Image (cartoon, rainbow, N blue to C red; front, side, top):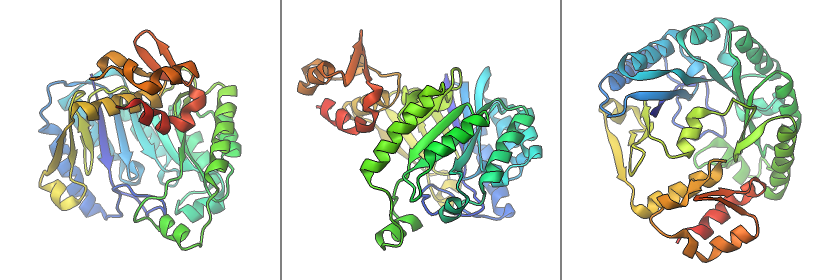
Length: 359
């Protein structure tokens, strides 16, 4: 079974923190893109055609006409064997969401929706370059439920100049959201936010303060029935993101669209060009992972989530790594048979643990 990711690179505007391949383009350009995207899907040659999850991300998939989105999903269904209970997700921004769009998505087969809320402070949203406010975010969730969506996720940002993520999480839970992703705000190269911070125009909270807020958020969500199944992701029972979970557990996936990545589930990874000119020429970058690189991915991805990793799949004997037994003795790592897990209490230091485990 494989997962399929579809990249929709269009946005209504560029957020100050965004470093993804996203662009503001007119409808004529979008038509060319979708024509090529559907062709890419139809001509794909990959042995495993059984699909367990589909994820439309971006960019902002909801900012284009819904019929374009539905057309791509139909192309996938016509060219792959999509499981009857496949999780099919679309990312949406509250400001580009209408009841009509949501009903069109749901009728086409989408059964999970992820809203880029980020914050429920309208002034902070304006600073970030988001086009919605608190009222629009809450209204979008209400409309999604009216359209038939039960599996609703919302993204929040940690580390904003005005931190109110705990208050926002409580509000989202009251709205019936089943899944919350809480991501650390990153200063990415080439973004407006990085320039503002480096120029002294914006001050972000200290790392220690952000970590403390993160720990409080974890406790709050868990207290309210949201299990932490990955460093940044929390879900009520039965509402894990199956698509993202497949990434973290090393399963094969195909990526279609500008800059989209694919993985054969073993050692081969490839990516589409991240500029339109080369993408329309079908250019890709291919990488064959070495055993050491694959080991690093197995350990890193496994320790990010509650799946852990199977030590027998490594090319080296982890029992001989000096730090391994010490981490077990200190209850930072937990071992059950051949599986190794990171104690969720230590998710915030996962990077340092991973470094100690690799030879």
